[in-house]
Length: 308
Image 1 (cartoon, rainbow, N blue to C red):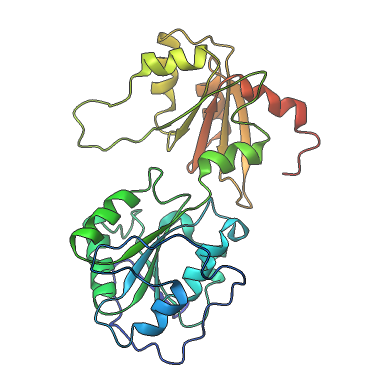
Image 2 (tube, rainbow, N blue to C red):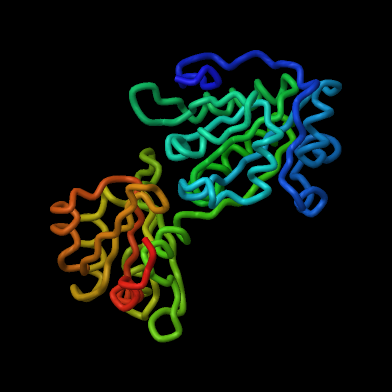
């Protein structure tokens, strides 16, 4: 492993000086972003200013950055600017690979993924963010997709605020948008769908009951809406059954977009009536996004010309 990388089980590097670090080089971005969300007195400065000032201030700050679906080319310019000015990047399981290989020299990459064999708890992620920023570091918390779309970015923002750590939320391209687009499936279409509903297929395990009203979701699909399920591969048989019980017809289109924007990306199409068997035969595995609705049929019309 690259010496810049730190294992999930390892302890964070101690804060280090930032004198002589290169400034961020992304053009045309400085001074054009909105105000930094601040939990402490005053606002955190722009990326390049904050980085130069960490040597003389007690508290650094955190950027909660959306990494997009996986392809580094889909990161926003603001995200790259934050990364280039960071001391450390704390990344999830779905933000590795090609993206990490492009980190600037001198940026410490810290694996805080929750997958075995060394999962990092959310509480420990909170502690690491506060410890590093509290020691004067500029920290990027790199999260797959958008940090506030089923990414627990809201929880991390709340914790940072409670600890008086200034932070900014940098939006990312959510797989809600990226996966259907990669597959040639429009989320809305004047002839097929005028609404989009996004739900999680992996609710908090400590919930006594699901917060999702599947009868209402079924009615939305029947009315011509598009339903997008994130993190729903394992629960596919459950929610397909709930939609069928709610009256959604078996011929309704369903697509599973696996590893959108990754080299191994693929799309498996079916209907609500055949989806469970089709997914099993195709051995669909996470990360995958499920798209349900009439818009799925558009893929067949465009797939031959679609560059996948």
